[in-house]
Length: 162
Image (cartoon, rainbow, N blue to C red; front, side):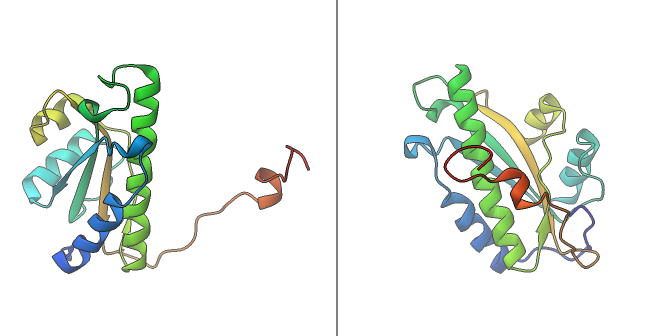
């Protein structure tokens, strides 16, 4: 969902989305994430300029970051910590998107952006690594489910292929 109306996302919709996002599971309950909610039009335009994945100007973007300082096992610099951090942030973003959908909104996570300019624009300290930009808003057109592979192609029971 990448096409939005100009209608702002009201706080009464944003708050339950943030609550759902923060209720996501995380490795060892470290909650090694941080989020920046962006609504200011100038900042949204700049984010879009740094992110080819943001096609139309949304009314809201959530920048989802891995917090290395809270990583399982220390500094967050190991491959294992990085992988866990990405998974935890992704689960939180999925909760955000599910809540948005339940509230009649839409969104689409984008990992395609220039991290350096995004980091500077949002004032992120060194221990926060931006992983996803998540535009959220009121859909410009009715949402249709995206095609999915058949369950029999991807789900087995007990052993692969059964």
